[in-house]
Image (cartoon, rainbow, N blue to C red; front, side, top):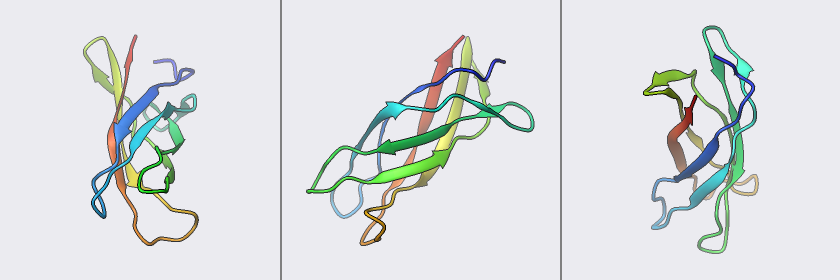
Length: 97
């Protein structure tokens, strides 16, 4: 499986403090891992309630899926270096080979 590719990243944060944020971006190209490869996702969420969040997380390894593979990811956002509230981000990246 070639790790030199990226994935579209679409999703949402969980609903925290009565609101959520849209996630949209592109992962970095893959990095070799022990059994497969992973991707880094560094994205700023959509603006909602007058603020946005930034997160930088590593996906799990590739999991074969239909005619391609997926990566699962989960992490927490930060807000301007201070944490009045955080959101949990989670989702899957899909690539058709």
